Image (cartoon, rainbow, N blue to C red; front, side, top):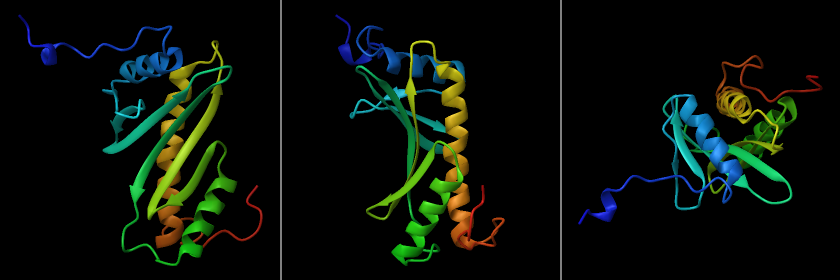
Length: 157
């Protein structure tokens, strides 16, 4: 008899989690190796960064691409400065939001997805927006960004 732990991990049937299945297919097509974690999120690594996709099924399907980064000691410790950078980033970028939870930077992009949505393109674009958001947040706090590391003042349109 074959050891059951050696069997491949098959994705759920398409009718059980249709959006998550579409996300898995999109990530595989992009050459990534997604896996489903213990929370039911799709986990994958891109550009040496661990990212996740949480799919909410129901009347409205919502896809949330997100990552979590422990904030380094080099970043100013003032929580107001950190949150101001999150606010500036959220207001500057479309789709992407940033926040801090327990000393961890969380950057996320969320979409309402319909059956006709091009999930593959949406996943690819959102991954890049999340990664760019993390970089911009750090540049805003540590310097090197277009604002010399200072929070934006005024409307950046």
